Picture 1 (cartoon, one colour):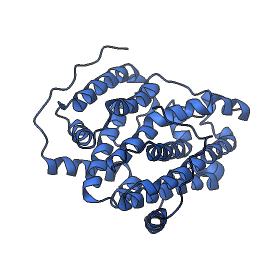
Picture 2 (picture 1 turned 90 degrees about the vertical axis):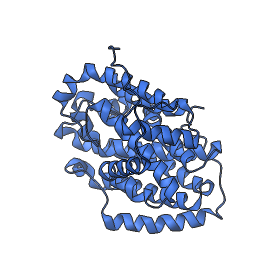
Picture 3 (picture 1 turned 30 degrees about the horizontal axis):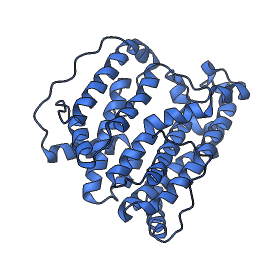
Length: 326
């Protein structure tokens, strides 16, 4: 790995109100879907969830040399490939400093320090999120479905576990369900962004799937392969479905308002995946999202699901589902 820059120096704490405003602005610009669901948390949980999101977004943007999820062109990404290793190393050092209670001056690390201390986030869990970025920096490819799910855990499943701890969860079975939701979210994101990712040099579809479909890894974005890619995207959404269902079972283990927020997010993201499938080869003509009206519909359905979870039985988690590392 290339030599990294030294960690950012520790600085004075950012005022709490300023930190909260930064986090709210970050989530509003970076994820309208999650921002809508986050409004349903109680104020203390909402603050922690948004602060954690701000750190996650900063990590993503730092490694990719992007801003609020807008990726650079493939030429720019290639030019920055060497420095990405250095940025990742510095990111890891600054994260470790924040976890030790000595965050650098950047607000994202001040945010992480507050959340980690308040909710006793295990350092290994937080740092596992950075492993996903390391896979991207290394240009890792994914041969099997299990390989892909390992990546999804690092970039999203681990975040689901952290978010559940922010909601006050310590029960391992409920944390498993929170991880399931993160996996489902990431599989949906990958399906929605297959072509854009491929154009930027990243292919997350398992090599076994591509080989079976007769699509070369370097031609995923080619227009002539769009029908085959639509079929593979459908496979990702089918793969996500039992994880969405498993996450809903976990609502019972959450406080009511947190269950409402999680059920709403579940519905919003799941609809994105279903829209990808419905559009077929046209799914990548424009970025798929949900309307304000659809989000409001999921808010109502989420409340109903949260209430129902108070009395619903909790079946065991399906053994066939990929399980997070302990």
